[in-house]
Image 1 (cartoon, helix red, strand yellow):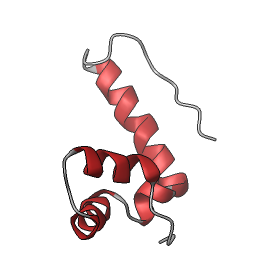
Image 2 (tube, helix red, strand yellow):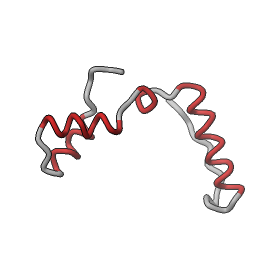
Image 3 (cartoon, rainbow, N blue to C red):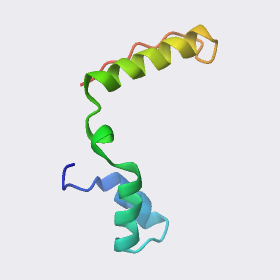
Image 4 (tube, rainbow, N blue to C red):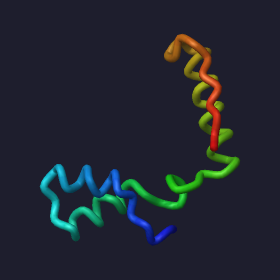
Length: 68
């Protein structure tokens, strides 16, 4: 995993009044190799999730994600 700590998550932790050490734990709960880059397997999973959500009426319009 990258040593870089996502600024947005640290900002969210700070807004919650967390100390730096607690903020690092907070970030660690949400940032892992999958959230940094979930690769082809993850992109396929997202497409399938959105397709099934549409087929079951959870998402009214079929969403086709674009990954960058």
